[in-house]
Amino acid sequence: MQFTLLGAFMIVRRVTLLGHKDHGKSTLIGNLLISTKSVSEARVEDAKRTSIRLGRKFEPGFLLDSFEEEREGAMTIDTTRAQIKYRGSAFEFIDVPGHEELIKNMISGASYADSALLIVSAKKGEGITGQTRRHIFLAKMLGIERVVVAVN
Image 1 (cartoon, rainbow, N blue to C red):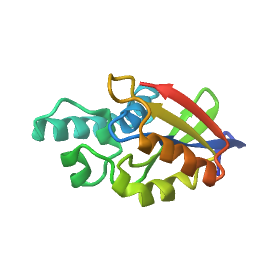
Image 2: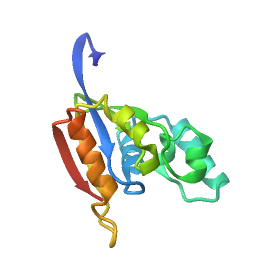
Image 3: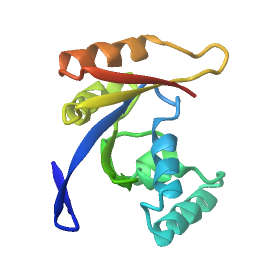
Image 4: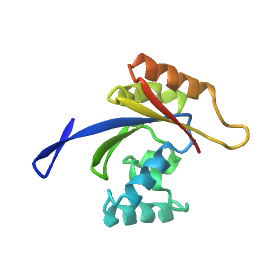
């Protein structure tokens, strides 16, 4: 995939975020969207209103959750893509579900990536799980050679 920027082509790096459920994949992408101003204020305000309506603290991951079920359950069900242009580079982040029962959706989304960011929780008792290992194995099977590990 390529974007045109001032008449020149820009290579887009497609990065999927992998990891166990609730380790921070959607939240990280949401925070990146906000900090790089890659999302409109109106969309951020909509996510904040949804958080209030659900009686929750604002969750940047809501920027990626399109289904009401995702927001209500605070979990990613379907894959979502988010484009970010930063310092002359373009990235397409692919958010995939971390729940074991949604592995088919994870494979579907991750299959478009050329690299991965593996999110591992640093909370006591969490860390590397069976689902974390499964995501690494599946990424390799999908031909994703570049994996960066981020401890959250």
